[in-house]
Image (cartoon, rainbow, N blue to C red; front, side, top):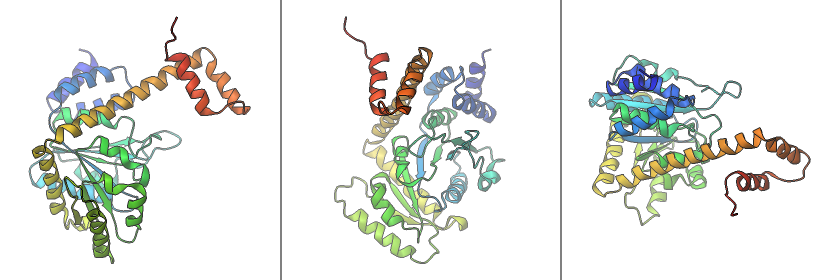
Length: 319
């Protein structure tokens, strides 16, 4: 039996080792990956996909750990995708499997995977959408996707998640950061974590006042205070996430978000296939080396060269 068939059978049987193998094969660009993903799309269910984003230092990982606890207490399974910064030397995820979440590794209802961002913009990994598909095929009730935490570049998570949770913390200037990054337009639920700190109530009031300026909300994002390290406010936070997901269903907006995630995955693959195709051809016929030499000599600039390469290798000329 081919390896990809074994992996797919393992996903059907909900074998954790098969899921781990599938993610590794997809992330490494294995020849088996296309076959696995093709079948995984046919197995996809209706997992609740929640994106979790916010600036470094707000306690996202601790909050994720607390959310896992509440989800499990309510009898649901959960898969966690944590996108970590990449090592500049190995390309691997620097933070790896995160010490905070290692206590969950013996729970069969929880599966955790770190992905390396590998320089990919948007706070995600280039394979995030595909790994989400594998998790859906496995049949998790919830899929939590935690982004790198790079501030203004984290908007890509809204293209894959059904609900986006934006995490902030008192004293980090997040109200100003929110204005700069357009975070208010991204979040479906807002969380002010570390709410036992001074100024937590002030930050909540600022956020709510800013949200109130928009009179056109179909869903007005709630603001929830938590102290994730103590589990305070986390059940209420999950309630609000569930309320948003139910709102999407009742208002027929869920299918729109699912379609958006398909489009994001399609665009990511088109970019990858296009770039790989152009660079492969340009490298094989010597065009790439010549182009790089022109750049180093200041005879052209990257945007002009990119257009020329697209014209040369992708656009068919009329006879």
